[in-house]
Length: 287
Ligand code: AMP
Ligand code: FE
Ligand code: FE
Ligand code: ZN
Image 1: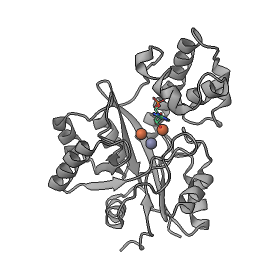
Image 2: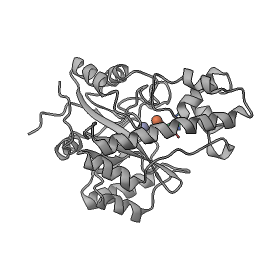
Image 3: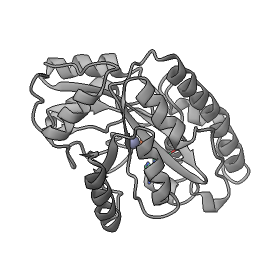
């Protein structure tokens, strides 16, 4: 029997090891300040924040669930797969995340070159906004645009210059979602599709494809997330019930980079326990 899972659980937060604006320990402290008692760190395509976040959680008497948000792609859709409690040293998963992060760098440089044709923006501006070797993404380009006084904040950057319709966008390498689910599952982790039913360009994958992900070992869906549509949530809750899948709720906190606040959505204790019971890659860090 696993130790008791503490209080409100928020299973999706980012630090400056990817595109959040705060170091892992600060992210955990913010979560605690917002009433969260079980916290996961889910940086994009990397696990380097686990140690610092875990220590901060222990200091605050919180339960820490190691996680990651793995980039994937279905046709033109960017799909994010949350992985929990997988083995961080799994060779196949490490190789894939290395490849994604590497390709993200060249891709960000291409986007900056495109923007540089029309605006005063240099690659050095983006480097200055990126902590260490953080997983680089459009949010760092947004921060560089803010620093240059070209836009007010990340939201304005994403609504304008960084939006694919503006023509500066470039894609990056990412595995197929089936591969992403299998990599996490084979590494002993639990795979949950992040914000699966947003509106707009990245809207929901076709249902038959979602069924294939379930057959491939998908653990469940992140349903309570501010970007999921009401209709999408209804449809996914039904599918989750039919297949007895895990459903989660989380904030997708990015520090100052997004309005999302820790604990604005939470995951039930029962669902956290199901994730812990199902995982074999590593264990939570209990207080
Ligand atoms: P990328 O993976 O480099 O294409 O960038 C996508 C990331 O940008 C996502 O992980 C989000 O965290 C972030 N993002 C998307 N839209 C916004 C927005 N409107 N404001 C701030 N961050 C955003
Ligand atoms: Fe992000
Ligand atoms: Fe995401
Ligand atoms: Zn996220």
